[in-house]
Structures are given as structure tokens and as C-alpha cells.
Amino acid sequence: MRRLLIFAAIATVFGCGGDSVLGPVQTVDGEWTGTQSGYNMSLNMSQSDSIVTGTAAIVGVAGALQGSINGVFKYPNLSITINVDQFEPVVYTGTMSQVQAKIQGHLDGSGFTNTEIDVARHN
Image 1 (cartoon, rainbow, N blue to C red):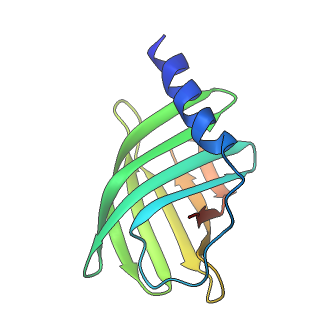
Image 2 (cartoon, rainbow, N blue to C red; image 1 turned 180 degrees about the vertical axis):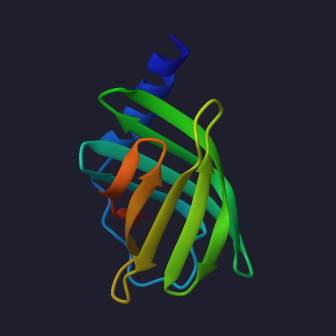
């Protein structure tokens, strides 16, 4: 039941896709979402200097995962580890676009192998 509620909450966030992508940014602070390769991902990140912390949610046909984030952002490169209870860590690495608030990246670990998923920050 808990997974269903998490899935419903995340689906609601992704369903509000009428917002446009922001112009270029130099930090990863804020909410980033993306849908690609059969997955929806939401990253809520806070940045202090180059250290990134926050939370992540990944939804796919097999269910939903939610975990904590820790990593590094040195413009334009992001490397974060997503820690989910009872799963191996998932690493998300990406490169920030220079023309819009978008990160092109991929997931590796805990069943993901170079799975492409881009996320964008919306207003």
C-alpha cells in the first residue's frame, strides 16, 4: 500500500508537466524531474559549495523507490549516489546543459546499467 501511495504522489508531480524548462542555471538547488527509458525520476537537491544532498524518487513498471542523495556538483558535472533501503546504491551521473536548466545523465547500479534519464528544473 505504501508503494502505491508513493507512486500516486510521484505520478501527480510528473502529471503537472505544463511548466516550461528554465533557462541556464549554475547550481542544482531545487526540484528536478524527468521521464525516459521507462522511468520517472524526481530529484530534490540542495547544494552547498560543491556538495549535494537531498532526496530522490524513481518510478518504473516494477514499482517505486525513494531514497537519500549525496554527491558532488562541479559545473557542469553532477555525480550523486542514491541510497535506498534494502537495495544497492544507485549512481546518477550527468552533465548540465549550458542553454537550459537540464541535466543529461544516466543511472548505474542496483539493476540499472547506463540507463539514460534526463532531468529538468521547472518553474
